[in-house]
Image (cartoon, rainbow, N blue to C red; front, side, top):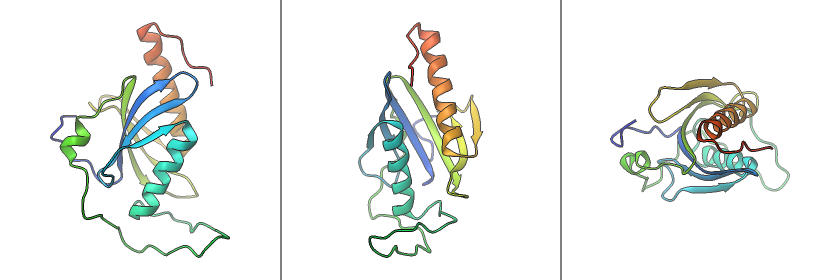
Length: 154
């Protein structure tokens, strides 16, 4: 994908900078002014889910239960006054690997969408976060094999 491409608000540019003990890197989305750094699968998933909740898209099909304070109902998409430019997102690449993730829906407390490389030559559909992580790990292991690097053992 060229740097002049359009990145919808439900697309994450995932830049993987490390893949040994755990996944680490940066996530980009046009609703963020600065990248979302992550270290670990849990931090990645929680950070992305928090972004979707703040933006209001894709909307969750189930309301979250909380005992702390009442959750706000979100009926519309919240677009911040300033957003990251598509061109800036398109320029980002991870040291190990780069992926684009489009989360199309959040049903049954999970994500459904598409995982692809920036060139759109390798596309996989996923039905849950676990399936997404499985595809990420398989691809990263294959990349390590091709480069002659040891695969991560998680």
